[in-house]
Length: 119
Image (cartoon, rainbow, N blue to C red; front, side, top):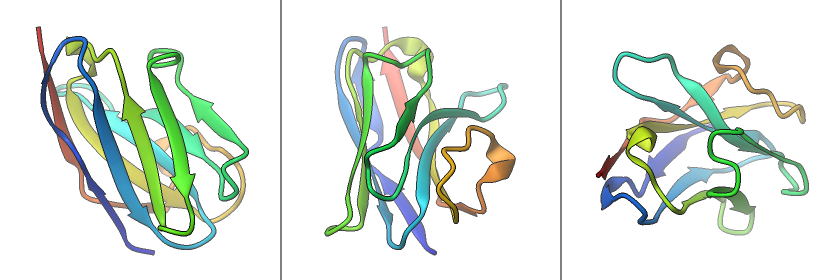
């Protein structure tokens, strides 16, 4: 499966960005992020039907993951962005239905898209 993430950019604190991941096939798709000097961490994940989602505590209430299978797109809507959300964001996919939360559980990775939130 090929994954492509896009939509990053520079935004002021309190602003919004929408990241999109082009992902075809029946995969669980996760969004991860990696800030400078830190480990890559899960942000959100969604199963193929879209009925099952996971959102990390650090972004719950601000970020929403969704998918449109007709368009082969998984979207991460990020609202009320904070400087600590600054990171490179990656989308990844795994081949079964479990909403895994670890980097090692995902088999396929797209290139990252950079998000910078200024204070």
